[in-house]
Amino acid sequence: NAGIAATAGDFLGWLAYREALRESYRDFFRDVDIWLSPADVTNAFPHDERPFLDRRLQVNGAEADYMHNCFYAGVATLAGQPSTAFPVTRTTEGLPVGLQAIGPYLEDLTPIRFAGLLAREIGGFVPPPGYET
Image 1 (cartoon, rainbow, N blue to C red):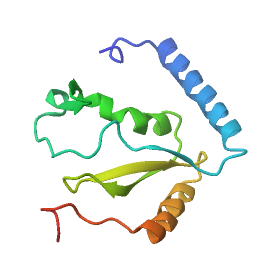
Image 2: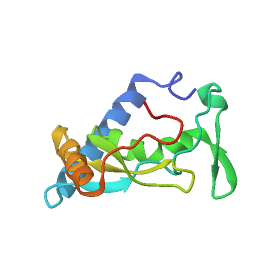
Image 3: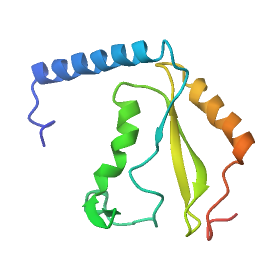
């Protein structure tokens, strides 16, 4: 609801904050090609068909708001950095465990290429049980 009550000044402040983040990322990517981070706060879990805001997660045995699952995606996308999520292993239930490769601003192909190169080395995506084509 905060966005509904936001003023033009609030919005301009948020844009300035985003630009400050972009500048920090520009500094970071002067020395680094790819930033690897988790793709999500949890491993993959069974699909939940409830309305988005009604969904809940189990994180380390405790119930958490489903929006927490978007944290690592926000690390990249808040400043507009390109990101590619990819599987690196599987849980004991056969569901994927993923990482994301974050690249420099407007260099969308950098994380895509990295994920492709890594897939050649460790194996690409394999559908989890029940989702084979």
